[in-house]
Structures are given as C-alpha cells and as structure tokens.
Length: 76
Image (cartoon, rainbow, N blue to C red; front, top):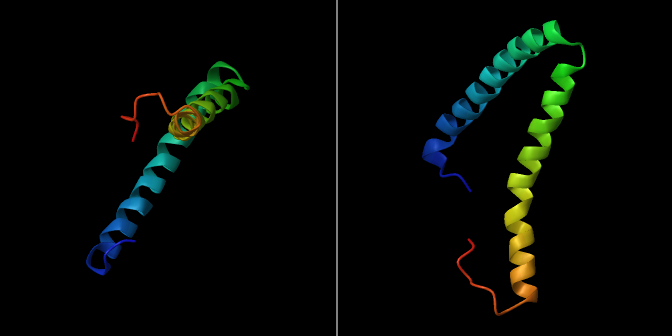
C-alpha cells in the first residue's frame, strides 16, 4: 500500500511515465514504419517478450527452488 502522503506524487509519476511512453512509442514507431511496415510490430513483440521474461523468471526460479531444497536461497 502507498502511504497517504505520497499518493499524489505516485499518481503524477505514473501518469508522466505513461505520457512519455506514448510520445516516444509513437515517435519511434513512426520512424520504424518508414523502414518497413511490419517493423514496429516486430520490435514491440521483442520488447513484450523481453519484459515478460524479466517479470516471470524470478517467479520460476522461486518455484524450482521450492521444489529442490538443496539450491542456494539467495534469490529474492
């Protein structure tokens, strides 16, 4: 949970990050579209797969660690 005192700041940062992402995403997609019409979609697929792996790998590591108790326990 977010403390009440910083909720406004957190919301502002979240909104600013979204707006910057929209601006940069549209700009770079337009540039990539100039090279090939399918290139923006290919790059987006690579970014989405990479982000999914970054988010899911720690979860998988914890599951395998629980299944094999002899593995080191330094994974957060």
